[in-house]
Amino acid sequence: MATLKVLHFPDERLRLKAAPVEEITPKISGIADNMLETMYAEGGIGLAANQVNIQKRIIVIDISEHKNEPLILINPEILKLEGKEESQEGCLSVPDYFDVVQRAKNIEYRYTTPKNKTITKTVDGLLAVCIQHEIDHLNGKLFIDYLSPLKRNRLKKRIHKQKIEGHRSKNSEQLNNESLNKIL
Ligand code: GNR
Ligand code: NI
Image (cartoon, rainbow, N blue to C red):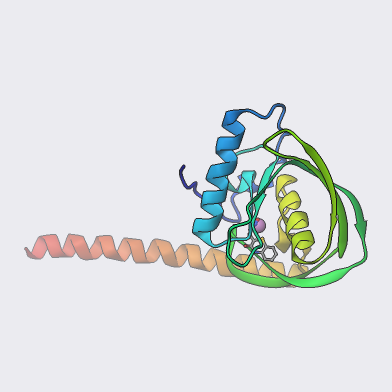
């Protein structure tokens, strides 16, 4: 098993629509296992394949307290959305940002397992939120897309600033090494 690199907003690859899995093969199970390992390593409760640049409709979830109830959902689909509820969300592709999003409270969904069984279930609560969040990823959508334009612009500016700061500190380190070399 291996961990994979998680793409961060505003990476355009997060905006691609992932393609359905045509056939469940050992390769697909291997991808799902690596996704679970990545999700656990990053401390997330869910992960969609396109967050690790695999453009296939696979999501993994574990909302259990002891992180020992992994779920693998292949070609997940929402069949029904009912009610509304707001909850705080975060995303491994948008580090250090959390905000309230309104989603359906109850959902009916269908998916295929790695053993090639197709299952239909109804859920609410955190699992319902997580499944909606992950299926959004497969469609190229991020939870920050639901924020007001004002909030989204503030977030964009913050991320842009962090990027510039990152470049600056790298460059100044280089500068210091160069000056150090001259001195030595
Ligand atoms: O780890 C995660 N926590 C979370 C909290 C509230 C709603 C959704 C999530 S999913 C997120 C991991 C992630 O980015 N999955 O795509
Ligand atoms: Ni996410």
